[in-house]
Amino acid sequence: MNSSSKENYNLLLALAFVGIGAWKTYDFINGDEDMATYQVFFSVLLIALGFFQLYRWWKKRSAGE
Image (cartoon, rainbow, N blue to C red; front, side, top):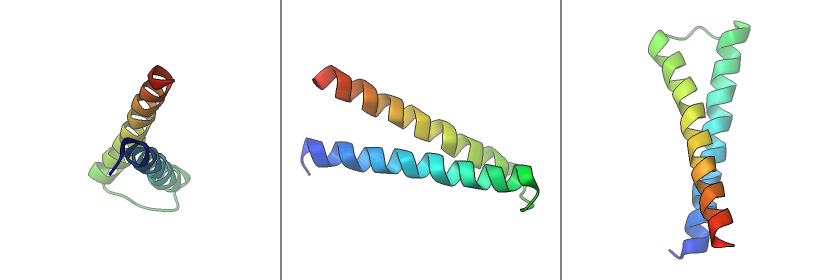
């Protein structure tokens, strides 16, 4: 796997993490879904991990150009 496709794969995963975490957290906050405490924790953790991965991708991308 070359560097460019790996960067695109990491970007896709980061966006998926933020999207899934935000969706699950939004459902919990609206009261549409009952979740255990650990599930709420992991949905917020997914959002944080996704933003961290996006930051790393952006930092690497801007340093390479």
